[in-house]
Length: 367
Ligand SMILES: Nc1nc2c(c(=O)[nH]1)N[C@H]1C(S)=C(S)[C@@H](COP(=O)(O)O)O[C@H]1N2
Ligand SMILES: [Mo]
Image (cartoon, rainbow, N blue to C red; front, side, top):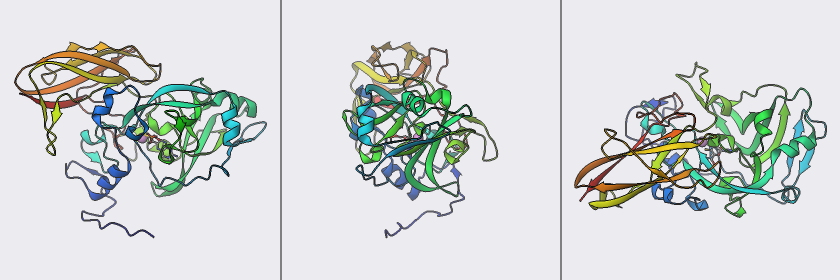
């Protein structure tokens, strides 16, 4: 038994939203459990596993790999049961995939939900190794009534008052796409416990919640699944509103902060002269078409130069040469995708704080 930490602020669980920039103890507890990437990590094309952001709703389950099996059942001709060796014997692919939590940027849209208090750190890119899901579903044989594929994790907890195992579904068409894999390695090593050991789903282009960890079973179903994790990941105006689901990641750019930081005020100092601003941008299943930089809080914009892509489902590096002059500057970036969608200047509000791709701002003092 662990003792609950004393809750010094209001323990009223009904307080779901606040415009206060004072954070509650339970938000800080969540922030320690679910870390973000340090912004300087945006300098690296591939995020080291220990720097990769983390988001777990419930406790990390203990999994005995020797006893573990994945079952594939439901509306299939031949139910399957596969252990880790069976999965490793199948054709393997490795490629970089950018994950972003749908809640990234949550605290900037007010009133903010009292939930995982993401700033902009809920994004990272790892090299994932696994076996394509489509051929496994084909082997099992989808029934004519097959409509969705339901993925269930081994982690159990309570959300929306429902005692549940973490569950998300995909339509059959989405689940059968070539790039959807069952991953057993991250950055060339077996998955670490917090990232879903021994096996997780990886659905490139979609927001992070789709990548179900600690996979226990896959069921083909003949209806649309409407569990808690489907209801939460929607842009809605309130609990009664159905809204629209968040699915593929919206276009976004972030900057690795230039200069040096003052600890613990977090003010940044940059030396006057030529400064190379760098960062990364991504756009779900679309391409990043353009990244712009402003050094005057959006009054004027300049095109950044894009690096070569590192893969179709990974973020893209960008750089911009800034001639920094003395004084205070507000640095901003905004990206445009191949569909012509541009990041909005202001945060995008939704009740659960998901799908906010509003522009990030970084103040610096040039000395
Ligand atoms: N089983 C399970 N899978 C899960 C989650 C979870 O809580 N349980 N969190 C999801 C969410 S919201 C995100 S953003 C990603 C985060 O993956 P990472 O922690 O490996 O970066 O995992 C997803 N998969
Ligand atoms: Mo997430």
